[in-house]
Image (cartoon, rainbow, N blue to C red; front, side):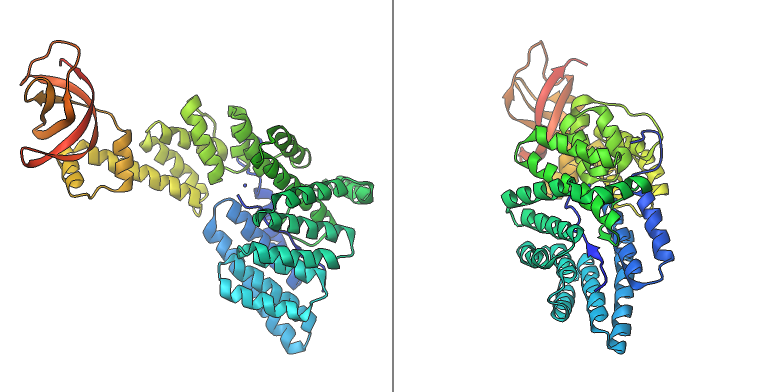
Length: 459
């Protein structure tokens, strides 16, 4: 089989005023590669790589298109090679059809194709490597570990052995065997830095290469990709085991080769919690949901206000606006990004969140409607979340002292128990009540709002 190695992608993803993001260059390169492909291997690898890159940017529909195109190319190659009686090439095409089906989520068909293909090439390490990738994409970690061990045992070339060891380490981690995964990744990195790869490193420097891929077809691409991803995975293992200093140092090692690596930058931002580190991470990949979750926590503590026009700056500003409750502004910011990235799931998700907040806001402005929905148990989870987070001030008239029940704009309400407040107040007189709505209750046989009082003041 012609050499075509598949590297397992990692599970969960620097120039602050530029609009380019880290994967733009690779996407353009792979699109050109796919358009000019003269052979099956180049074509299918380009589309698989594009699919994986699109997925890291949460562009699911575009990723699915690329995987579908890779599948179509593989099926065409299968038919051609079967007709010619070329079983080795038929097996290779079948393997990649299986991988594409796995990435599309078609488990039964993927398993069928992978099982068929490996029967034709049981002594080929590359076939076992691709097979392992398919098992990994299907989430069958234990099976992938066993298959990866076969690839390692059969491999001869040093760089290919490194690829297989890396794939095995990824699957060991997925299977919960973190100690062996850590040790194997440390071995892989040490080997890549050893003298046996001096000549390859000189070629890399001469070509000024830095890009990484999921499917590699050259020694340079393999070396850079395995070094990058091995360090990322090892740093993640260190971080999960509480070795934060070692994790930070290893993430920084990634940046020595690839200064805008989005996963390393996002991880360092999470560990450092500084505005500058988050700015670099968002400019490398503005659409990572893990990064966005980390940044939202940072925003709640630090209250930053971002300026700038880069994609990363716009995304940070949108998140800040959402956290401040400025949903109209957030929608405008996200709509600007959406015009540039119309197929991005992250933008759509955040847009949906602002719409839910807006609906919840309207819901709270009409207390009679709010009471009706609460009494009928028809409040949505989004409305309930906004209700729990909202403090309201209204003009209330209490029935008697101590304060317990009354009306707000004619809507009956009560507290959970009689309450007194500091100051001199009179029953039946309008007062300013600051409160939260807890739910619906009954008062004198009718529905009423159950509220938590926070403050009472004279108007």
